[in-house]
Image 1 (cartoon, helix red, strand yellow):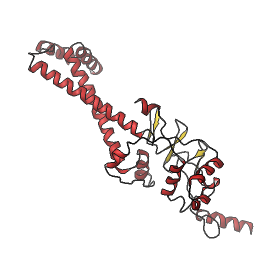
Image 2 (cartoon, one colour; image 1 turned 45 degrees about the vertical axis):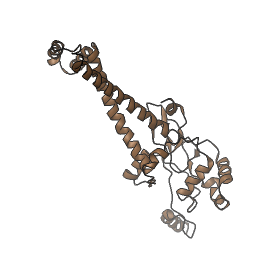
Image 3 (cartoon, one colour; image 1 turned 90 degrees about the horizontal axis):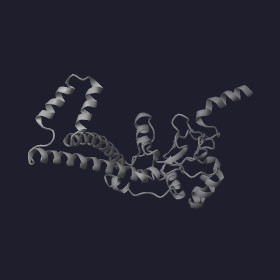
Length: 281
């Protein structure tokens, strides 16, 4: 929990456009350096910083996070490429710990009432407990159950086992979701964008080996990793236009325009260009 809450999630370092262009050109092959001009870099207008592929802007932290999955309110930190492994290990430890409590409580109760001749929840106590809460409505019944259960050792074991079982089931489902995401190599945000907004498909299908390979903790977003992500998403095959740095205020995605035609005018602006020509005539 401490590592997931205090470690950096993979925030993009803050630099000016010219500085980012210089840094990326220093690690890029000579054939790709022309495409890394400052005016062509994908840019986030919200935090005024570089926005590499697969990064998302977190409005709570006010930074762009590489492979951001979500902002966790319990950790008070984003979950991204650098601390995703710590977050999954935290989920696993919570799940394992709560299941241990459940199993211990169940075995202790079985041993008490089967091998030791009974505990402190006898028939008289149980019947009195049922009669006292039978006609109590809603919250009164719940508070009565908690109060009378915690008043005895065995009742406390039952209460602790019930609460731990609920936590174990909830965290176990969450752990299974993240194992499935590691199997396909995408984040929750990328999966939601692909399924509901027809976003890009970042699934790499590394198989179940990706579940364990993804647990390797990364130490910061390097310039070489940014260049590799740009190449993986086809940036150098079809570099963005000079005005492609606009960031949507609704979902934080980079607004892409289609490539220019032979006359140097974007296909999406053909109608506007024609109208401007008629007006000038």
